[in-house]
Every structure is written in structure tokens, then in C-alpha cells.
Length: 198
Image (cartoon, rainbow, N blue to C red):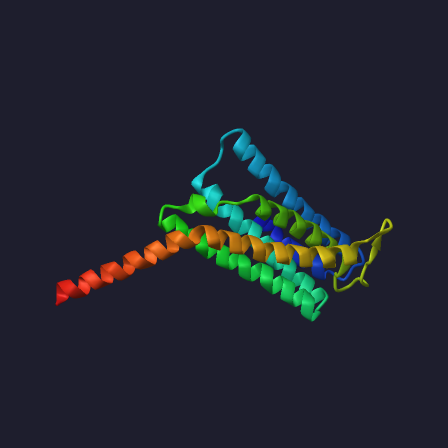
């Protein structure tokens, strides 16, 4: 369902109406809620599957990446682009790391940690606030019910980006011994092959 909501989010974000900022934030919020609800139901009723374990993270990362691209387009500042690049780059790198560790049979070493959950929460708050604030056909919305939503989103995105780097480094640190061992094993296989050919 979340993948289907991505083109809807993009379409609504660019509609020439004054309510698109609220609708964009609502769509993203609904996607975040369904993500949590799907995970809770799967764990509660033991409905987890290999396909779901693959598709859920893909849908999450696509939704976050698209939301970040929309926000940068709606508010194209160097810092906004930098934080977005940090978050998207880290997601790609950690996804590749997890796949590599899965091939080594050690994916559990890079399972989601508490800092990753805190990062995700900060990221969701930031994206909700910024999608509400920077829709292209609506003036920048800084105040909602007395709350400075743009500045909350701006600062929370920076915090999320820092936590993103921190958690990424933690995953790399946890995986590093296994990666080095795999590299040594590959070199040894190459050496044995050369000796055999010789």
C-alpha cells in the first residue's frame, strides 16, 4: 500500500491548491502509520514472511527518499539538500551492507538497533513538518496552531541526519570483523587458486 501512495504523494504535492501542504503531510503520516501497523500485526499474529521482510524496508526507503526530494525541491537550500543527501546515501549504504551480511549468513549483526528507531522517529517528525511547510504552491507555513512547524522540521531533519550517520557507523562497526574475515578468506582462495594453476 505504501508504494502505491508514493505517486499519490507526488501528485498532491504539486497540485495548484492551497491545501496541498496539509494533504501531502497527511498522506505521508498515513503511510507512516500503516508501516507501524503492518509491522505490529505481522509480529503480533506471526504473519511475517520473507517477501514482507524484503518489501517493507524497500517501501519505507522509497517513501522517505521521495519525500526528501520533494522537500528539497520545495525549499532548495544547500543545508536542506545536504541533509537529504546524507540520509539517502546512508540508507543505500546500510541496505547494501545488510545484503552483504545476509550473504555471509550474519544479517543479525546489523539488525535495527535502538538508535535506528530514534533516528526513524526524528526523521518522520521532520518530514511531516517539512511537507506541511514547503509545498510549492503554498507560501512557507511556519506556524500551525502556534507551533513553528518549519523550524521544528528543519532542526529535526538535521538531528535525524546526524543520528543517521551515527547509526550507520554503528552498523559498520558491528559488521566490520565479518567483512574483514570475508576479505581475508577471498584473498586466501585467490592465493590457493594461483598456486593450483601454477
